[in-house]
Length: 250
Image (cartoon, rainbow, N blue to C red):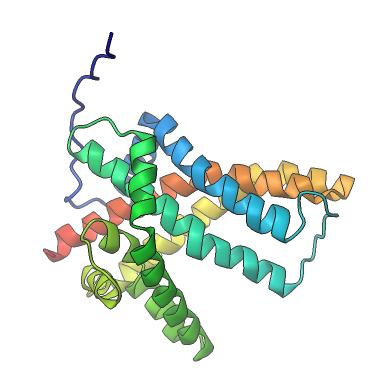
């Protein structure tokens, strides 16, 4: 006997304006409504990347906890987040969100596979984005901040609109143009919220790592925070992209 198809879902309207409160409530609401799907998406990315990079590469599986890691270790962890975790979780979450917009039940396996399929061109855009922002930060910091916001929608521009390379960055710029300050304020607020929530969840594990001297607890805390908060952040930023598109008519 074949399993019956689930009933159609009420589609989510993406291309519409949302204020900051609506972005947050709609993004979190979608995440909670399809928690299993987005949890599995995050699990499929956050766990293996952190185990390989931090657990094995930086020795946190068996090493001693260091409350003041050297800059190289911090840079490696940041690079793994920017180049791997963030774009992959975002791409997979976007595909699940697009299914919801079409009234279909999102399936984690399909979203994960589609995210992996687009990862090569997405990685190329991510490298361009990171290189541009880093170069801007070296030039008195402010140019880097400007580009960070101007290109902040490079993932949905790649996944939703199929743009590649510099075209994805320009697509993001078109959505931001004329609203740089608004995008800056909302993006910074979302980063603070996501970072604070992730840090709050990880804090008991960091305390355990500090008291025991075992870096394994630190690794578990990082994984736990990432699994819980990477997907809702990606969903809110994607809704923000559609909000900006609706405002700009692009």
